[in-house]
Every structure is written in C-alpha cells, then in structure tokens.
Image (cartoon, rainbow, N blue to C red; front, side):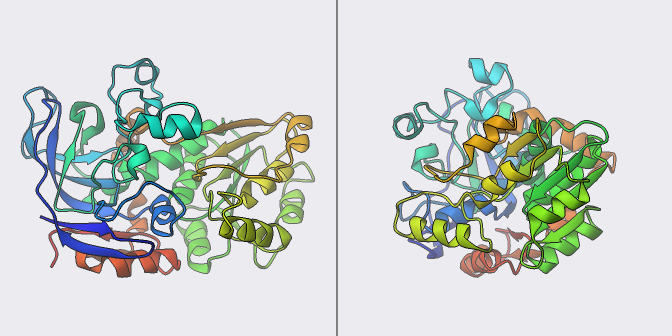
Length: 390
C-alpha cells in the first residue's frame, strides 16, 4: 500500500509499505478515507521530538471504512464508517475505567522510554514516535486499529466526512481544553493559538457558557476564522501588547480562564521568544514556553490555566511565584478521545458544533511534503490527505 513516511527532518516521502494485518483479536483494519495533519505532527517533522525513525508512517487524526475485524471485535462490522481517536486505550485499566484514557497503562509497548523521560508510561498514539508506542500512522491507505471496540466510533448519519475527520483529535482536544478550564456561565476566556484546536476550544467555550472569548494569534487568516467562524474577539500579538489589552478588556481583573493551544513551538515578540529560541536551538531547553508565561501573568487571581499545546521536556524561566501567589489552578494533558468523541458527535449531529471549516486543503499522499510545508508556514488551516487520490 501507499503511505507517507518520515525520512529525516522536513523530509517526507510517499512510499510502498506492507499492508497491515490483524495480529490481535481486538484489532480492526480501516481503509483510510481522510487523514489530517495536526500541529503536534510538526514537532516531529521539525525534529523536536526524538525516537522517530526513517520509514515511520506519520498521522494520527483520521477516519475511514472498516474492512476487516478480529474475532474479539463486537461493536464494529465490515462497511462501518468510523472515526478513530488518536490516542490508544485498552478500556480496562484503572485509568481507562476513570475515563483518563490518554494515561492508559496497557497500550504503549515501549513504555520504558516514557518511564525514563516522565517517570511513568503514557498511552500509545498512532504515528507519534516510538516513545509513544511506535504504531504506524494514518497517512496511508490502510491502518491497523488495536482495541478497535474502544477507540473507533461509528459516525452518525448527517455528519459529512469533511467534518467527521476532526472528531478524531482537533475537536476532542479543543473540547478537553475548555473542559479543563472549568468554564462557568459568564466567564471570560482567553485562548492562545487559533489553529484547528484553538478554533475548537473557542467554539466549545461558548457551549460551556462563556460570555466572552478572546483569541490570540498573529496569522490574519486564522484570526479572521476566529472572528467569523468561531465568534471570538481577537488580538494580534504582533500589533498589540497582549497583557495590557487583556487587562483593559476585563476591567483590570484578567480572564477567568486561559487556554494554551500552542505549546512547544510558540512564536512571539521580545526577549522571551529569542531567549527560548536560542536555548532550544542549542538543545539547552526542549520547549518555548512563551504562552505559558503570558497566561500566568494574564490570568485573574484564583483563575484556571488549561494546557493542551504539546510540551516535550524541560522549560525554564516560568514565573512560579506569580502562579503560587495568585492561587492559579493548572490542568493539562493529551486528550481523552474515548471520553469525548461520543458526545461531540452528538453536538455535531445537532448542529451545535461544525469543524468543517478547518478542512481548507485536500491533497494526495504524494503531495505530503508540500502539504506539511504549507501547514508549517501557516498557509493552510488544515491539509487533509485522501489516500484514494493519485
């Protein structure tokens, strides 16, 4: 089959690889119809996350058609149109039973790697390096889905493929960001990053009762989408001083909740950006925590900080004194796909949530390198690969 494979930093190629097969009774084989790029893929493509090898298939946000199921799969059948959560979960361990699926104890066969880095094993993630399980990704004609009854969901009638594909990752990640921010009716919410996850965090903040949502970015097209598609007020950080603007917009108090949808490759203005950029380039620091610093200073006393932008390792110059003395609450993590996808499909079917506007470019796997470079350069909101195209 065809697949889009990693061959080095910013070097992706469409190659022929062996077809996947059932190797466990709980597996299903999915014929991929759509597979989207994601901001967290860029951390791999740009060389910031280790343990990816030449020949690895990228991609973790996808949907498709069930073409084969193992003998232990009970909920799916051949021909089902499904969306699959990007995080793998067994459904049986203590973490899965408490719906903390991205902490699953049983889906990362390379658990020793994240145990050394983080002190504990993480769940496996499709196409997201060997530290996260070494699973083949979804930028391919077919993919093996382990624990298929837990991670694959039949898409209800009425939801088009162009929207359904984002129920795999962008929508549940944005929803979980708003959920962790503990948004209460009337809250003012500030969201850094207007990519796909940021747009979904904005839309779900409204569903949870926010009275104002302020979105922060510098890309004109993304800011336009935040205003026109997601109904947010916007701040362009290349033109305004964000801290002053947020204070002015909230009567000097600060937002009730601040959400980071950017993570380790943040860009910005001033000393902080160049300090982090230099340290990251010299491998003296893993991540660029500009957004995290801003959120701690901007957030109101007693407010909530929610982080879904991906960080990989060590950061410094974090104002912990401000965080402690302002009594801020922090929550963060990889999204719990299996907890959120069923309710999000209901929101999408009811017309309360439509991520279809994220789908700005459709390309073949052969155009993978071009698609990722467009996405990296912010010339596309989301590039979605259709493996059926030549």
